[in-house]
Image: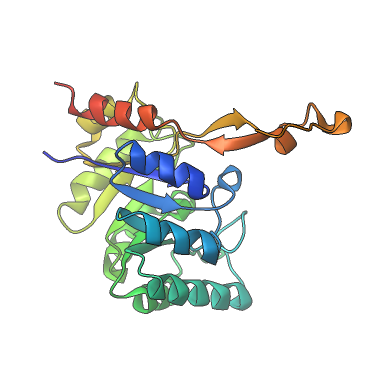
Length: 244
């Protein structure tokens, strides 16, 4: 059985580390602390030029909820067009209606615009009202996978729903657990859910290399620490999955 490990990255540097660690696919974001927003043109362009790995930028113009205005939707369509021109392998989307249902009309237009790129439906799914109904609708949209924590804060908490979704999905769509997926639980998640693709951010921090530290901001993590991924932690995820 072949397992797929997707790593959520926040910039060029963390993407490089994830690739070095042996990730199979990158969900490229900005602002992971907000759940991920659309990365810049320049970031996506350079990552596409430098790395042969599957690259899926997230299409999310802001943090917060997944109910978007018409203007925000136009931004999303434009970003999909740009990333298709840059040669990305896919995009990550998700839009809801105010009543918690899947926004079929506008998600469909995003999937259509993305073609022939692949499409992942992100954790907007975890905020929808009826997950089993939403599963069928997202299959109907033509998405190739759903990233989900089983409608709980972490995938371990939502394990039972993830397993049910994976069973119902069959070979029609991939169910990919994400949120709180770590080396100490990824094997258990695979065994308990039957899933073969897993998503993790492995977010870490490293100290800034700045020589000058302004005294007014010397205790400011925002000013003097940077996002980081340890390639060894990506390898450890793979080893944990393959163990036994």
